[in-house]
Length: 163
Ligand code: GDP
Ligand code: MG
Image 1 (cartoon, rainbow, N blue to C red):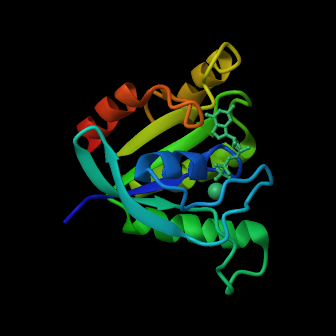
Image 2 (cartoon, rainbow, N blue to C red):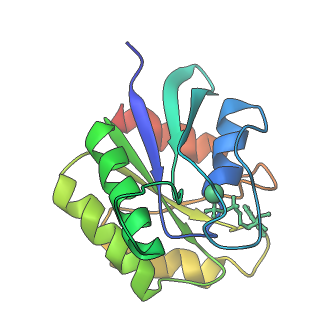
């Protein structure tokens, strides 16, 4: 059985862009508007010779929760529960926000292996935010650009150590 890697993080950090990159297909919807992923998506992903099931999150579909925040939280918790490894994504251009701290808290409680990704780290704008990511207490961040396809060798090494 392939390990399950859940991609977790607040809206708009680039989870779906990373998911599409990992599965090599445009399955997940990418949008500038936060929270646009309409449901949970999964696909077979590869990084180098690593194979795993990737789960994209932050959907709006959990009908039992009335608020958007509640639906996101519920979906994040269920994805974390079903995962072998958490791929936690933050935005290196923005740095750590209270929402990042909130999702990181859910992930820390799960006690599962975490690979922390500082996405949007292409160019110079990403450096300060990537350093900021150390504050999450989820280990050393891997600077990445899902959109520009940069940093995937370091992501490979981090995943390889976690799997
Ligand atoms: P999600 O809400 O976390 O799933 O985020 P999306 O994947 O929908 O991306 C949100 C926005 O960030 C979109 O406009 C993406 O094009 C943009 N984005 C994603 N990855 C990168 C990246 O590596 N660099 C930059 N500059 N933008 C990115
Ligand atoms: Mg998304």
